Structures are given as C-alpha cells and as structure tokens.
Length: 401
Image (cartoon, rainbow, N blue to C red):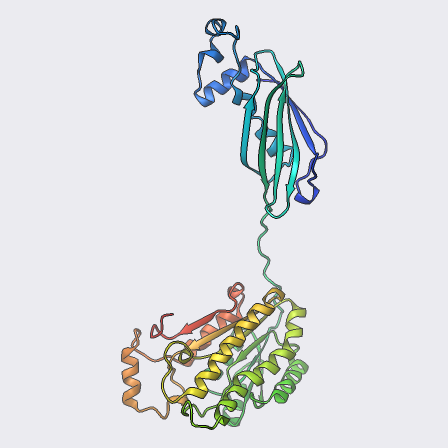
C-alpha cells in the first residue's frame, strides 16, 4: 500500500474551537500501488496512468497519477483531522496546475479561511505541493460540522403526581378524577353545590380530597392552591373543567352579565389558579395544564349559546398563549374539545334530538364522560411529553378539523 503520513496538531471537533488559520497536513507517496488501487476502484484505466509504453509517447514521457487518486485524500484530512469527527464535506473545487508522477512525494494541506457560526460551516483552502516545492493542486472546500444529537431526556416524574380537577363532582369532571386517581395521581377536585356527590366520589378514591370552591372566583382559586399544596404538595397537573351551567342566552340581548359569568369561570378563575401553580411546575421541571373546551367553539356554533361558546373560545386562546410562553420551561398546555356528551347538561334536550344526534355521529353514539377522561389522562401522561398547544377533539368523528 502507499505510504501516507499525517502531520497535525490538536484539532477541534467543536465549532467554537475552530479558528481561521488552523491547518492540517499529510504526506503521500505516489507509487504504483496508489495508481493501481485507484484505477481498480474508479474504473479509470486510462493508459496514461497505467501503461508505461503509452505514457512514453506523450509529452510527459512517464506515467501520470490520476489527479483524484491523491485529491480524494483531502477527505481523510477533513474527516479525521480538520475539523475531524462529525464533519460533512459540502462542496469542493480543484485546479491541477502540474501533474504528479510515480515517485513524487506530495504534501497535502487544508487550512481554515472562514468560520460561519450561523451555518456551522468552515471554508477551507486546499493545496498539494510536490517534493520540489511546486504547487500541483489548489482548491477550496466547504465543510459542515454536525452537532451530536442526544436522546431527548424526559423530565423527571415525581413519585406522587398531584392533580387539581375543577368541577370534579360529577359528569366529565368526576370521570377525570377517577381516571387520574387510577393512574396514580393524588387528586384534589372541587365542587360548588353537589356536596353529596363530591363526598361519595372522594370516598371511592384512594388518595383524594374534595373541596368546595367557586371556579369563577380568583381568590377562591388561590385558596384552593394553598389547601392542595398543604395536603399533597405543589400540583403538577391542572384540569380546568368547571364552568357555568346556564348555557343558553342570545348573542345580543343588551345584557352582558351572562357573558361575564362564563368568562369569569373560563378565564378569571383559571388565570388565578394557573398563576399560583406555575412556580411549582417550573421549579419541578414539568407541568401539564389541560382545559376542557368544546367543539362548539370550532366552526359554526349552535344558536342561543353565545356566552358559553365565546368563553370556551377564549379559554382555547388562553391555553395556546400558555403553551407558547411556558413550554420552554417544561410546562405544557393543551385543550380537550368534547362534542355532545352524555352528562346532566343534556337533561333539557328532547330524547328524540339526542337519538338523532347519535345516529348522525360516525360512531353512532354520543360521547361518554370516560371518553373525555381518557383524552385528559393521555395529555397528563409522559406519553404526551411533546404535545403542546394542541386541541384534542373528542367527537367520535362528528368534527374533523
């Protein structure tokens, strides 16, 4: 095999260590082994390189080495020495000023002429000089230094995760409390008037408390946090489910009170609760904020439900803002948007209308509270570690965004 000798100093493998003027060299002896090996590999069997008799008839009078037989060795300098491991050769130009002959000893060199931090690239000057000091090759190249991609480390999960579920005494909220408790959470859920249902649910669960609180009252939400933190520690999961029950009102009747009531429940109270919980989530390195919205806030809303729809739409916007502002601190914010679901809120709907709605659904049924709870549990889990700012529609296919 050909004789190849590298002469280098300590070379960088980190872009920050690369400086203009850094240089690496190697020496190559041009012999028959080098020429024969390159001809076999490349298929270039030009007699100028391989046939002494043919070469004698040319103006060179002897065999000429393939230019690329030694020019290709710049790949060795770049990939192993400067910049070294992690280098990707992007472009190269060569100009051959003189031929190289068998018996020549060449010195190949690369030198950094520019460092481009924004693209992580180096510009290189490439040269080959023979034993007589004659420059037989000049060129320039561009090399990218790749970053090592490390596996994404999931945030540490507390031994006992703590969840607050607002409006958790019945319906969707109760199903969510049950599911999170089954998944190992310590659960604190709120109720407003349904004390008997709340206490009965609390008795079912292994590690839970129920607290009477008004989800529309910011002061009550701040007190709620203090009560939960004292009992279980700072919560890492918030499920914003509570809301006003008076769903029906015209869009413009001159009275804004009902709009304000819904906005207080969907924004003012949640804003206060999120604000006091964020510090603990950020300090712990992770947190999940999950709001229960509605498919009515997407597309054409049903008539006569303007306060409810407007408040749910505002809640969705708030969740997206949280996702953008706190995602880089480990706090994810997402929204579950249920379609028509079998809860007490449907009690005023005629049975015929419910059956029609079920038949029109691709799954031929209305949603169940457990369907919503499953979606919330997913968003609260580490399986959703890369889900942020998303609206998860749970509609059986009746709404396909």
